[in-house]
Image 1: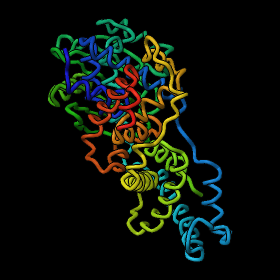
Image 2: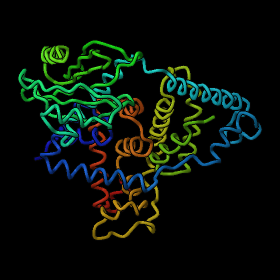
Image 3: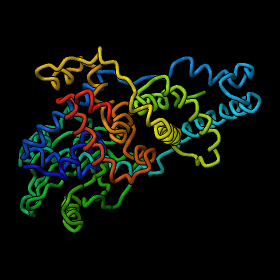
Image 4: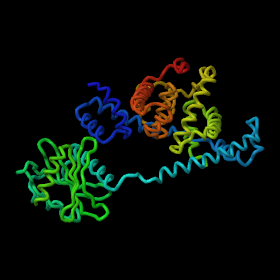
Length: 252
Length: 164
């Protein structure tokens, strides 16, 4: 199955340039396409061999020295016809590079301009997408809340509230530990018809006490605080479904 | 003081396929960078410099096209064709073979491979340096890598390589 679009995407995937949704859909495609799988392996091998071959060629010391020395040793500027003018230019060029380096450094220092909640929502969305990869959904697979709840004992420093809402159309599938924003969070996995909902639970912290809902790349998230816990439900179901699940939690 | 000098030199070396020329052209490009500083808007300094380097290289290549076409390759170091040259190169043991394959590619393919594989530029930086829409970077890389793989599995005959 030669798939031209996927063949291009493969390179974006290899280079880590696909957005999370495209990357996830490409990984899904990989499972069913031996051609792409083989090509990906070959491209990875080629990449490795280029890296190992050490093809990068650094500037020779002579070039660096001549560029650095120009600003001081004006009499040394032989290859150029107008030494006086060039000494000036080298001095200016040196200043330019200092400025350019500074600008680059400032760029690095600049904060990302995202609020803590946006960063956390993005991290949880990524965690949700990761969980949809084969074999990543649950660490403990059980529809029984009395199996899932004790599983978290000793694995995390709080006891997340675990309930099965099968009678309300949100059967519990299991639980899992995840890491988002550098913190370990409990993830409760629910099904909604054919869809998966991850409910991430962590202890509420004053600095990340946030509520709200949002949408990104076709996924919705809904955040609320309850009994000292911070909940974030993430899924591709409608916001109404998420709100319904939230009501079941709040009614506990 | 010259934080991106290695990047500038490496790109010039692979575009010109020659260290001596690369040294001259890199010097020239640095002077141009100074003259063009008025057009520099604070941003990615490396991408800005590399853009000047590649433009300087292409100007140089146009001016020296005749000479470049007859540029002598050292045929004595040309590796013998083995039964499966791709495997050989893919083992990473054959720097020479990768160099030949890369140098045999058209400039635009060589450029994008050097920027991505050696310099580690993001697609956004590659788009900026090569003045192409960012949407075309991925497909251009796909084509370039395909060509490199072909070149590794069928080393071009000497005549064909000269004509590049």
